[in-house]
Amino acid sequence: MRVRNLVAGYGQSLVIHGVSLAVDRGEIACLLGRNGAGKTTTLRTIMGLTPPRSGTVTFREAEIQGNAPFRIARLGIGFVPDDRRIFPDLTVLENLELARRVAGRSDRWTVQRVCELFPVLGGLLQHKGNHLSGGEQKMLAIGRDLMQDPELLLLDEPIEGLA
Image 1 (cartoon, rainbow, N blue to C red):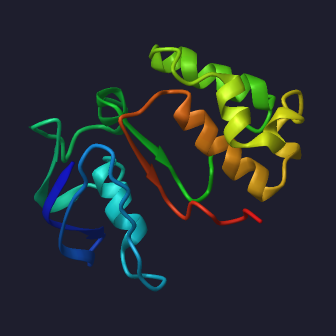
Image 2: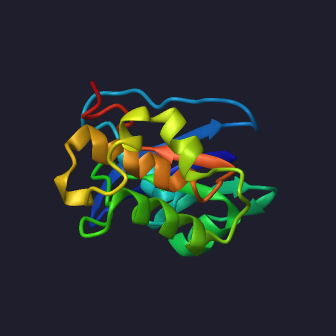
């Protein structure tokens, strides 16, 4: 993925000005900064949730900025927002299985594999999402996105709520 000179904001306020970054296959990148520095806005703009004012986002050699979030997700980019957005009335197992069915991707990620990554979820498969702690919900949100087998996974505040 390549981001070049990305500019975005909300209303009349610009939050990010000329952000550029490159993440190649197999790499891990981290956006660091104080609160309000634009980390979340950058991720939301890449994912199509905040429209860019200018700049480009390239994934798999195609410009994707301005596309609808569902189109960007179908290209293979996953996004776990800081507020988790799990399905509170579904069980952990239902949250995970639903994500895989919706994505229609390979079986590379399974419930078992997610539970190996996050062992605490293995004992909570029949618990509803709204009965989980904040950290457990964060693990579920990450696991749910992994079940969609993204090529690139964007995590906003990935360790918030994790002990």
